[in-house]
Length: 367
Ligand SMILES: *Cc1c(COP(=O)(O)O)cnc(C)c1O
Image (cartoon, rainbow, N blue to C red; front, side, top):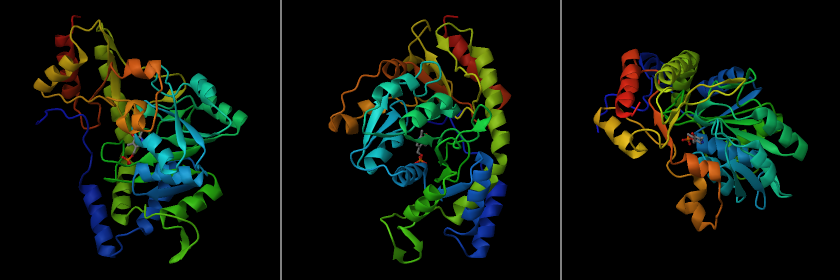
């Protein structure tokens, strides 16, 4: 299908090409000076002492979980309303994901439900800053401090998002993805952010086969390294991140202005003290809207507008987890999975595109 307006589009150009060419010229294409520079610049941006670049957001989650000491027998509380990697990184450590429900307001993990899911085996909480909006980090950090739990923030959708003027990824151990659809990209790539020297040291070892010194292996590690080619792209992308986030926020404002009065549509809510960077602009389609969500998707597709459901099946209902014996009921998650729909909000949209999306949805509604 050839869409007129795509749900996402990587914003890559000549500056990135030039940066890659410099790396080619240097002859150093694997992890090297550009990776170090990206780690320095990105951690400075987030506001942490250390940054550890990896090959993807998923491998960053795995390394963060291992560095935090998550092992067999441990339970880790996560939202089910997320991408599967959030929970899978716990399985990689032979530990057990315990699913908590979300708030209906911001789609993020519900601190009250975290409390209910804590047992003597609970080791950590992994909140997700879904769609680009921070979870309630005050409530979550308070619980963690009270119960002596580790917090790993899945900030894979939230580069530059803030809670009480502090960037996400700087509260607990931060994890970011630089996958092609994210607010900044290196094609594939990831980053761990932390103020903890020990986490920094262990993460670096795990990323590179458990070694500090080449060919001397102290612990079990992996090859989860980023290349200098990717880091060179990332450095250009990081420079443009604020500008691109601003465009996302502007597009989101326009969409909300145009859609908020249509009956049967619930527009995204920005919670107090948050900076939402709109990785996704996700509305809810309820019964009051003229047609079903599935019909709306089809009708918009006919008009050349691509929309996507992030995510059509929550993690606790995925075959993988059913086969592991999961039988959980999460009322808010299960209600919202049938209502959500993400609309294009990316920085390459023109004003006409945003208006076209608004008009097209308006025409299909009862009003
Ligand atoms: C993208 C994403 C990941 C995984 O990142 P990859 O770079 O694709 O491995 C993890 N969690 C969330 C919430 C994501 O959106």
